[in-house]
Length: 374
Image (cartoon, rainbow, N blue to C red; front, side, top):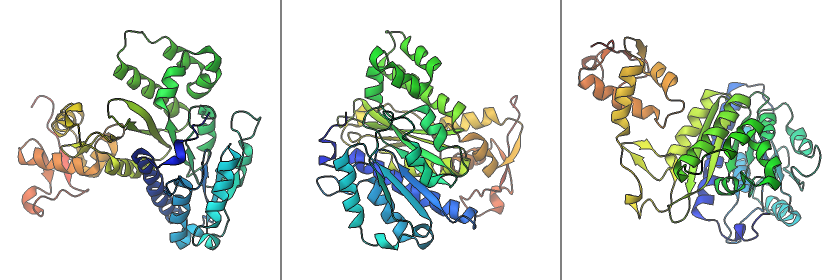
């Protein structure tokens, strides 16, 4: 059951969550509309929308997304939005907040608000999916716990072209529930029966950090296998910074969406070592820097590239495209490390550094890596 105090105040984590969704929605809409001029509709669906505002007045995700759409003429002429919440007072509050949003009448398609309980009524999700059927849609799934969040829901959301999904994975709630028989059907629906069984058999001796990594890896692999090739998790820490509270997980079938979200999540990370983001929001990180282990991620990247691409010649863009998925590295990190490898004489480039502007390394610069024996 949803905590009735959750929307009393917009905590830092909630504000970061909303910013990530709002930023991605704007970038995603621009790409979809720009890619296909004939696209006359795009969608946004929030399955667990909550009220329009927190009690402290901070706008929730639905209003921020609608305001982003209203700002852009092409988007406001195309957006079909559906917002659902199982609590009738939340749905009513959201309807009222939407009606008071400045410029809401400029939207060609007025937002739809539903009051449905996902997972408790047969085929109820069809009433949410139908308005955006066969149109590119960004789906947002943010349940309080895990009921209603299923692997099949995400598979269905991503079945059409241009569809991406962002969902919240309440790690603490799911971790506590994995071995509870009374909720086994919900865990099975989230991970699949085989993977759920494997999680139930994790050794008690496993450390809490190993267990968390295993559970996140399990849901990521389930998504890659069944829903979308590109999966990107972002971790949120508790206020103390000592434990994880939940994860935001992005799923897409297209590498461009993955690249855009990676840049957005990187900018919202509270930590970056040598310019490599943590993909984590930790409210304690600025106050408790000793909580975090030191590493040398860019030095690691240099050795990885020399190993993986030994004896090969390719452009900087090709190197980035072939390597960055599943890593924390951003495009700028590859530029930095390739310049360093060039300066150290460990790679050959065309055109060479003396024929380019200082400290530049364009996408089309060719890189030749030495064979492994050298």
